[in-house]
Image (cartoon, rainbow, N blue to C red; front, side, top):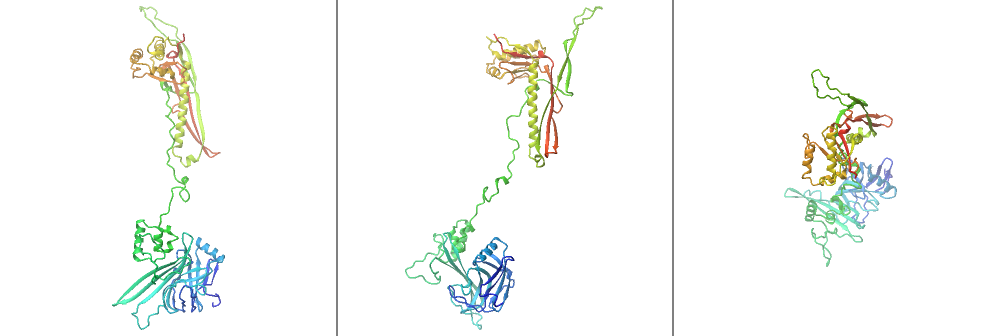
Length: 560
């Protein structure tokens, strides 16, 4: 064991097992008199915690940078040997790389509560260790010693009431925000004495920071003649780290931290180790998006289903006519070409009147309508909100549009065409004149009550701009054979883009019958086992029969 380590502070490191073993404290070896008064520790003077695993080893005596934990200590004739387990952390990995690069090659003990008698330590307590570039003995001073301390004689054994004073010192270096290296020493003194039978303990702490190229002054010494000292208060903007922190300053800084009015320099005065860590007391940014935030594509968006795309299509033609359920693809019926008729009869065994009725077949074939798509199955298994509802609504609207146009085309083709009368000299205009012409023919030739009129858009505009003081009443007289009236009853007058310029289609509801499958359109859904999708079909059948062509009058513009 004595030959295991050449000098104090030597240690071995096994990167594979992450274990460290080294000579932490040599017995009876006097530290080099550099920045501290020389001191030596005899075997038995250093108090070791019963459970050493509570102690850490750090880098360069920075207690905020632990990289290993004590696993055990061994008291040998040469000195105190310590074993450590390197932390399984990024800091531990960095320490291993630094050691491999030739840095942090020595062990340095951290001790507190030193009681000394001259150069010899009477007692002290081990609180940790640091991995440093130079060791605590021979090549560097012991970490825990105060460079300005005087020799504290141990109290005589026969004077138990004499004051007892212990000192702990932390010395290290830090780099400020400007990149300048400073040396820092923090000394804590604990004094215990008995006054009138009552034990009293006083704790004082001194912090000294050396500016680059200067020797740290002793806080206990008076400043040289002619050298002004900075006021030791907060609130003046002077938080020079070279001035010791008073108790009043400390409480003022705590209050500033609580109220959020502190600055980095003020915190650094409270404890110099915060000089390069001013952000410790600041609130760091947590942004809504960007680096380090929850990315926008990871947030659930507000879902609003299908966007509005104009008014839903409303059929204009089909509701004008009679409606029936379609039960077969072929629609058959008949119409009278010469209706059965009777007449006045003289009676008294005379022959009753009789005519020759004739019929003609009426036939129509229903047309099929369909649409289909193959959807990704994800819409079903992940339940895209509103997707299939909106899809079937759009397909139903497509059928409604197509069937309404087909109904108009069939009615237009089956109507009786007539030419409008000459509107010259009429105050009601060409549009209302043509409407009256068509309505008259529906009533006289078709023997039906007109229920609607479709007007070419340009003509409809001119009609709506006509002064109507007498027009509506005039039309009511012509069309008001029943409850329907233009002024506010059941007669429908609307523009329709399918008509040619100047045309008006006037008709009765019974003039044509529209046939549709019940529940049209029919929906069919099936899995696509080849592509792994969902197949949807929308199917309908539609047909019309013009019952009476004379009950549909297509009025064309007057030509001279």
